[in-house]
Image (cartoon, rainbow, N blue to C red; front, side, top):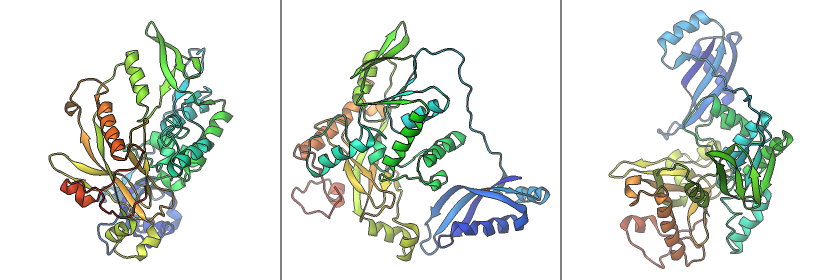
Length: 428
């Protein structure tokens, strides 16, 4: 019988290997009745700093169905569980004269292209940036040598997308076989197996270049092709039917296009609007990055210093209710703050952390939501213009040289700009 056990708890000092015994105690069975088990979800409960616990959801296959059926009726944390299968639709029957095109090689583009390749469609992946290995020198030049900002090869554009150099969190509010398939694909390409069940799965910026290359090798081995340095500048549509894409390197005929362009390709949004594709405004989050010593976060969350060796750098999630809700986003434990620049002569920040979370800094976005009725225009891209306005102002404050405007949290809360004030060390 397949069962799901929720709210199974172990002190953080106890390794996962002790789950065998904990499962048998919870179900009241012996080892011969426990056929198999696997973790579905694992999270940390740090509400009591005197007793930190891991909270597990476990899928169990066990014998003695009669006894377990009684347990299901008496224990709300135990239920019968039916594993959903990944829906793998049959291939279409109509012939296609051209290969499908996937625009963008971030997570969405990678997964879409990988699935198409597995099904024999030999997709063509168009990426405006460079292969992940070639992105590294351009980023280092910009960061450390004040090199020019390359609008096509930077933190945001290139193989792996923005996530390849900004943390690699696999944030998804959904669950189910589709999500499991995506996570399993990342594991097959080099991600840790623990991302399959962690509450906040994280690949790490240092691991993502290797994972992206592995995806590419798999896709190419299955007949897919990458074209780097190939920006999509237009869609060719005749009588309401897509016939191809106009690119920076020429026209490519296709009948199917998957746009996986991400958040930052504003020129693509503008092209789609000019083409006449239906578009509507969407709320978005705007805010800042706050940074503090990681040691402070560890003490606040763990209490005892010995927990650090067991658990690694602590993270946090905060929310405040008010006239406008404010919340933390993309918290980077043991990370750094990086530039996240969509267009030249504008400035924005992001956070990243490697898989070990081992810098002395913690940072997080502190965000509020702007809704369409606040945009001041009914134009579909009015929200993009608001982003540009703030990023242009940030660039000007940073001496028009991609320096990062910075102030203490107290000054920000007080609403004052104390130019020349000393601040704590920071990672930027």
